[in-house]
Image (cartoon, rainbow, N blue to C red):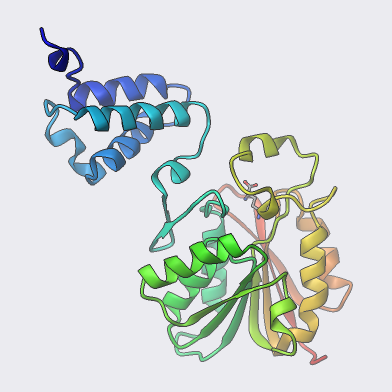
Length: 286
Ligand code: GLN
């Protein structure tokens, strides 16, 4: 047996090995397929068609590296650089939060409010990868979305996603919350800001993601509070506010929105039944 034969690993063997090493994950088969499909540049659905194909030494090394990193907890979206959100395939890097399925609830609720032919101005605060802004922009092509983020690195990712997806009705601006939107008004303001409390043990599971996009003071409400307060001078008459928040923050959100005078306040549960998105309307014009 020569050296080359000694390292011959077929696709089916590589898959089996990866599944074994990822056994502690919720769905090892899916995880293994995702990484191998990425390395082999094949759609996942095609992976099982050539079980006896041998991996090249480079493919084998890359697979081992990715499986090791995934096994120790690195999110697969960072390993493959891609995450699906709504109907979009987004590029993600460790500079941005990985878009979550629960944020699709915010998109659904926003689309219920925005008429199909509306020519609205919409602000997305803390755009990250651009997930929210790009999904809304694609669904409502006549609307103009202005998306801001405090992180230049995140804006770089978001702009690249817009370009790759050929979405032109989003403008990305650098700045904290409304800093880059002085004097501007919107029919709708949406945000998935950082909302995890600084002492939350859950942060350990999120250690690969940017803390800047996650942590929000000792009660997790710092940014939600700031946005709700500052938004008041940025609405057109009857503008909508939609805010994603943490699993236990619905009662606090009610208060935080009612006190300054928001109306029609409602909270909606995500697919796990957890209240996740607060919706409110600003009826007066300040
Ligand atoms: N949804 C994230 C989590 O708890 C937090 C996102 C955020 O802070 N906006 O896993």
